[in-house]
Length: 292
Picture 1 (tube, rainbow, N blue to C red):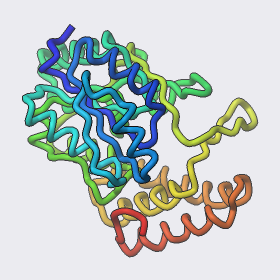
Picture 2 (picture 1 turned 180 degrees about the vertical axis):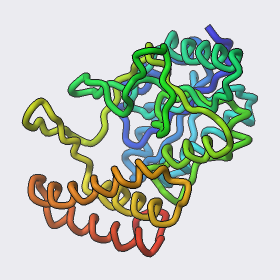
Picture 3 (picture 1 turned 90 degrees about the vertical axis):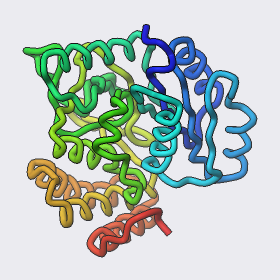
Picture 4 (picture 1 turned 45 degrees about the vertical axis):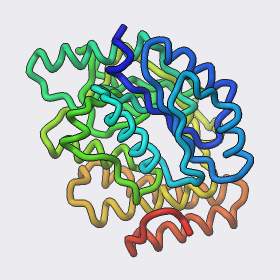
């Protein structure tokens, strides 16, 4: 195992199951330092975090409001760097990863850097928590690792030197595309992003899942997420020259397909429509930050 002062696990929690979160903290703290940041935005959630999340095994941080995933990660990263972290592992509260998996990510980083690769981050393959299918990345069958263009932050090990060179997360995006934008910035600085094909974590994308035809799954986000999804994609593809062309085309098409699908298939049509169209408007206006 890696000595605990070297790797800091930074977990961002919104409204977690505190019993499950404490169990994760207990396991991680056997080998690593743990920082848990709360984005709780109501009195009940704030009270549960302070009362139920055990701070004997972790550094517990709360700002008392939801400032978004980027801001939460930045506070946790800065705290880890201040405490002397050599690596930061980013985690969502609903992502499970074992201590042996974290050590495997570290070994992969050491192996690739020894081979002369300038590695910016090492992530995991991701299994959908509901379907158990591989999602996010297509794995390179010819290698034990896969070079990637778009980063998913949860389960990603980032060296401290890379964070200092590339900078922290972009907070004004608030939630969606935060990890993508950081990954593109990382690559612009000459680093390579990889995932270790042998390390897999389960992750839930969306509030729920609707099973469709031919074994497909539609991940259903909370209505407010529509705002950030539409706004951030539009803002990035219209204003950021560094956005990869393939990502621009794929996500433009995805928005065009999701718009009627969300409004025709999902419940809460009027609420979802309100968030979608305000997100489209603010995306073109480049009005960023938290939804008012």
